[in-house]
Figure: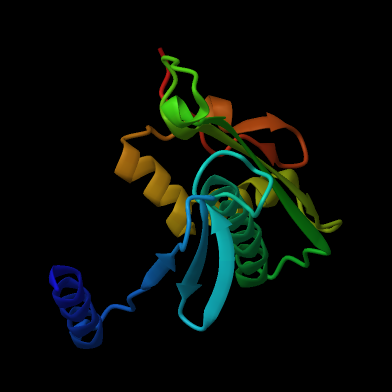
Length: 178
């Protein structure tokens, strides 16, 4: 009953809020670690643990969502600036520590950590300065980048570490440094 009451309170708050609310739920019927997740009108399978073999894991979905969020931001930033982007690609890499679920205790943070993203933009008429500005705008506008930085206390990388190669190959996120 308590869970139902909490759910109803969240549903009521979502209806009353002037800010868009995203609500998700997941259910599982056994101990396989596979859950059926529902977000809005979308339903998909997700693996909660770190096995990575029965369905995409929650960490894999997070990394994929981050890459999609950033690539969308690159295209929107280019469009706002009137720069024709022919192709944009973002590759996100993170280390994953399954913690005691995986049976190995380490000093690394539990779950995904030390995120890096590399953006590749094909925009033949853009200057390198414009490409950097597009990347910085996409990074600043990304809700997921901001969530990872702010909710976890991860600092923004120093400007000197953002651009790793010409043509907008960039490291967007880093974990805490020792």
